[in-house]
Image (cartoon, rainbow, N blue to C red; front, side, top):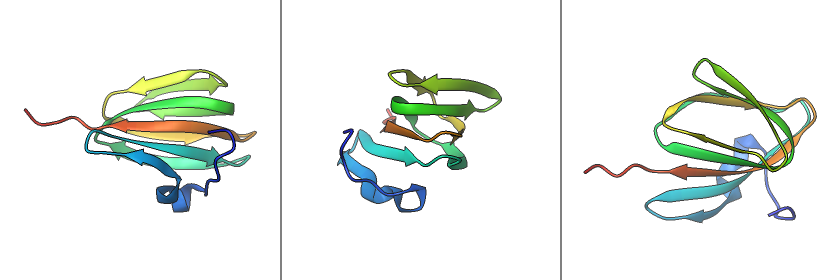
Length: 98
């Protein structure tokens, strides 16, 4: 994953490297000063920081994540930003209605 080609947030759909009915996995690359704006996620999410440092906001909580750390959240309002740049793997896990 470290060497996968990827696009910025505006073209994030091309960064998806696996998808099925249950989950979607993508590479996330944020350049220095980059951010992902606040958005409501209706699925569970997991972010693994491959390189760099990011600030992740979930509802009213904030966490600073660095290389080799994992962040997992239930459906929530999420945003992300970095001052120095970061590369992550993001996985969305869809909840099936029962």
